[in-house]
Structures are given as structure tokens and as C-alpha cells.
Image (cartoon, rainbow, N blue to C red; front, side, top):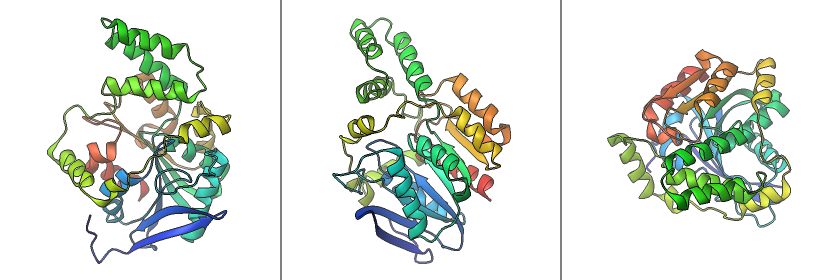
Length: 304
């Protein structure tokens, strides 16, 4: 993807505890800083970076993306994948880019990390935006399996699969993987009616440099569940605590993101407030691609 010469483009590889983290910053360092936290475990920031980071910077923000230690382009065989390690990585971003406070933009599993980081280090966070982000994990898994029973009610093989998933340890990598696997079979991560704009974004991404760098570490979830005891969280109380600390929390979700129940989204809206909450039509999990214009409008409106 070509970037305008008028936009400052910084590429940075830095060291945290002798380990290299991949990061890039887009925009003018004098602008409002936004740090994007990608999903996972085993995710990376390539889709957001390749489609949206520069465009968000063009709205007047200093946008920083990075891949967590041991994930994506931040390869590290010694990574533990724990939350504390993720916090160290994020604090390293602040140090490297000489930022005292930033707006956290967290997607999917990144929402868990962003929420916990904001609660633990409120002095470092100007605002938290949950974008299709997890916040009550077991409710999500329960919703997926409930929907699967209905969706596959006439398919004995798939109903057997659901029963097998329900018999697994709910605090295991296998349980998480298979829940999301069956969600994928129901197209829960896909927008219902792809628009010409979303198709073009996907095509541009898949033909560009960032897609080629879409490295995923399949061992990340296994390592995370092995090392992190807090692996199936309900952060609604944590979000309420953040609000009490006078840190704004915003939430933007796709109305067609199948991994969240109506109850979950209603609960979240009641926590962050109606003015800070947005549901986008014809939009699923990757809302910054599905409905990029609406996503950018929300970010500019809330963070300005």
C-alpha cells in the first residue's frame, strides 16, 4: 500500500527484555496517539495495518500498531503469552514512541488485554475503545454453542461436535478453538452482504505486503492457556471500575458479529452509555474492513 509523502511514516523495531517487537507508527507524532491492540492469541495487526492504520492517521491521529511478543511478526520462541508479558510489551511501546498517555483501540481478544491494561495502568490511558472486542468470554462461548444447536438441529454430525465441545474443559485451548471453529462454520465472522468497498479493501490487502506478512503462531493459544490462569474472563465489572476512574470507554460492534449475543451487547451499552456505544448494520467481526467509513467516523467523533 502506497503512503502519501505528506504523512510521517515511522518503522520501528525495538527491544523489550532483549526480544524484538514489530511496530510501526503512522501520522504526525504531535497528533493524538492511538495504539491498536490486535486479536489472538496467534493474531497480528496486519489486517488493520494494511487497510485502516494510515486512513485513521489521516483523520488527525498518531496511530501505532504492533504485534505482541511471540505472535505475528514479533517472533520469539521464549514468549510466555501471559497478560503481564503483554503489559510489558505495551509499556515498551509507550517508551519507544515517547508517549505518556494514549487512546487504546482494542479488537477481539485484544479487548481483554486493553481492558486489563487500562484498569491496571489508568495513568497511561486517555480512553479505551472496544472494537468487536471480547469482554465476557464464557457468555460468548455459551452463545456460540446455543446458536450451533439451533443452526445444526437437523445435522447429527454437527450436533455431536457441539456435545463434544461442551464436554471439554472450559479453560482450555481446545475448547476455545473448537467454539470458534464451529462459529466459523456458521459464518459468524463474515459480513452478510459484502459491499464493493469492503471487497476492494480485502482484495488490496490480500495482494499487498501486509498479507504476505500475515504470520501466525499456531502454538500461541496452547502457550497462553498453559501459562496464564486468567484465561476465561468476564470483564464487565472491570469496565465499570474503569468508568469510575473517569476514563472514557467507547464500544463499536458489528450488528452481525455472530459471536456476541443481544444480551451481551445490551449489557455493554448499559456500562459505557448510549452515546459511547455504536452498532453498525451489515457488519461483522472485522468492522474496520466491513464498514470502514462508519468505523473511522466513530473514531474521529469519539477521540476528538
